[in-house]
Image 1: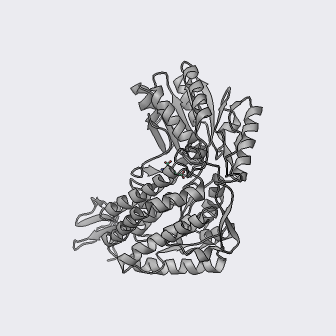
Image 2: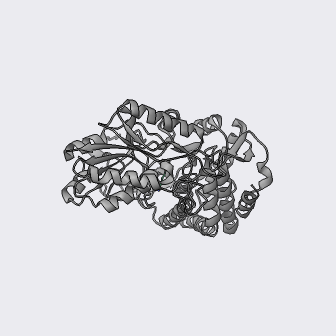
Image 3: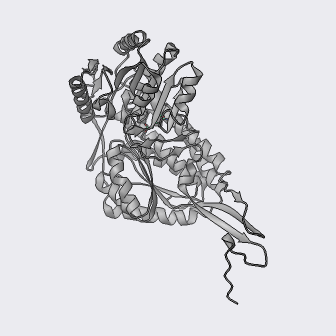
Length: 501
Ligand code: UN1
């Protein structure tokens, strides 16, 4: 705790504010309580939204390149605080330090992307059907952006949203998971440092609200929040989506994934094995992009699956702050129980389970560490169609390529997917219209660990939203179509005659 105190101080967080309150923050490393803080109330959320709304009204008038300058400074501050913030991510989420650092790198990368974008918020010029007319599109700042983020990527996903939102001329109200408020406080402080250096940003550009469902609802229901970008479970998205749409607000949903990999007979198995272990075992299976379903051609099944089991048996499980560890703990006991329930269900459905049991880690007694599990199933049964946020890899065999794709797509979620093959026809088919139905479809790369440059998100129960790179910025702006008449007559579109005499 003393060490944590020093870390928080380095990040600019006032440790004295973390002594009391209704939110108990626990580190999944050993289950110990590391801080307490107070939830917001409906009233305090409304006040923060009002501040953010006022900030938006000023910020939207700053030139986009100037807004980019603030994000550039934020990226610089993140570079300076990468080691400390990465470690705090590790303490608060239980992911290994390498992955904590990777998450901060992802923040730095999106800042760089957003800075470039700040000079590229282009609209189209469109040929008008009328003489002496010109049409164009203008992109304007949207308003207050509400960001609801999940525990598993407590800072990167927020930054994808915020770096774009700030450059697009919006303000942000952030509700982090109440499992990970400390990293949110640290980000707010780092952002404040950038604001201070920038010198002329309105107050309230970033507000953070803490708490559970009630606080989330206050954000979701407030008409001043133009866009709600929510990352989390499909269950959460089912509530948030319709509520925001009911008031005609905009939503961006990034929900559950149930990501698959097809391994074909020609696959480079060395690559496949590495990709499988990183994406199924890494982050203890707690990425929305984690590999959960392996669809293996029957010809190579006996070459691949025993090898995986061997690696699974030897993988270093332990304290995520220890440099040798590859698999840290699950977030909490609830998560452990859900994993055990899924494994019991899988057994009932004919699954052969290897691993999955709790692992005791010295001096981390209260942490929920598990052996990653491989579950061999005779077919894709119901349990395999659900997302369990834990390191469970379901494995099934296939014979016919067309059936493998069918099987791959026969789940409610549609986030990420991949194929391992050296056959160009299989690769092209997988990424074609008749192939994977996911938002992300990779060849010879695992489903997790996407770069920020592409649009991130997925179809079906994943919610349809796209964040981070490509043209995802368009969700954070409103588009105006402008038709300009520079002639001295008023021809009507569609050739309509309307003479008033
Ligand atoms: C998430 O788990 O919500 O592609 C995001 C990845 C990371 C982001 C994951 N870049 O795995």
